[in-house]
Image 1 (cartoon, rainbow, N blue to C red):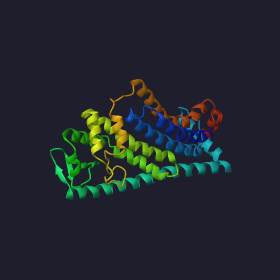
Image 2 (cartoon, rainbow, N blue to C red; image 1 turned 90 degrees about the vertical axis):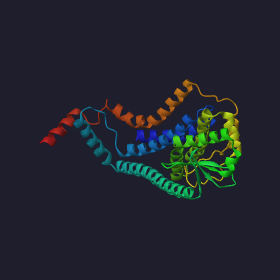
Image 3 (cartoon, rainbow, N blue to C red; image 1 turned 135 degrees about the vertical axis):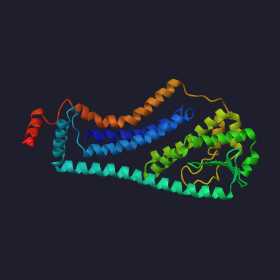
Image 4 (cartoon, rainbow, N blue to C red; image 1 turned 90 degrees about the horizontal axis):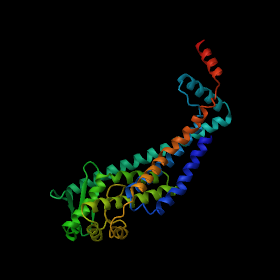
Length: 329
């Protein structure tokens, strides 16, 4: 019970504090890749903690031991002791319900979102094959439209799409910049990152933490793609290109169908004007360690009581021996 309450408390603490810390941290926009990972790990850590809390309520803690027979006997005695009482049965049933409800909801939402994404990608890809004009020299598809727009369609048969209006507005340097931006999305599979965030937010719409994670991740993947593109061209050229194209009309009914270059364009342009200010190696190492700790800590909390119980076995050695002798007889 203690482990379950600790895990639930940890999940609540993470949900209440981490979003505020990440949104207020000065390093987030300077290291969008680490920030994306931090938001993903925060989401996974909360969900893992809740599921493990259900497991802790269902399965009693037993001491860690290198003797398999001894450990199995301890497990059996602990299970008998817990489920011999009405309270133990109720606790176990609540744990099973909690773990299955959370994992089932996650699985269902991810399945629905993935199927919808694949279906709509295929439909959009077939449309592009009919109405789009391939430019094999530059590796993109030209779409006849009066709206200046650039976006990518991820997947195994990915496409980078640029409208005729955008093509007329951009010079060669700016075109290389926006293409580098979109190819960064494709190479780092930002569509899958956004799919996961959006699916979790849809699975638990009453929890603001997951909606915030989706909003921030959507913003951060654009910053990450900007940083990659600015290395291949330069920051001012990319800023100029952002002012000339929009993504408001990009067809993206589901996460990851299209990733445009115009989201929060004004803030992104302001960020690109000064030279890039990277975080130090020390800051990166500290941030990475904190992310890793958030991911591992739920498992440590769950296994901690078992390690402590190793010094205080649930069933004495003579009881184990007696149980083994009875079984043999």
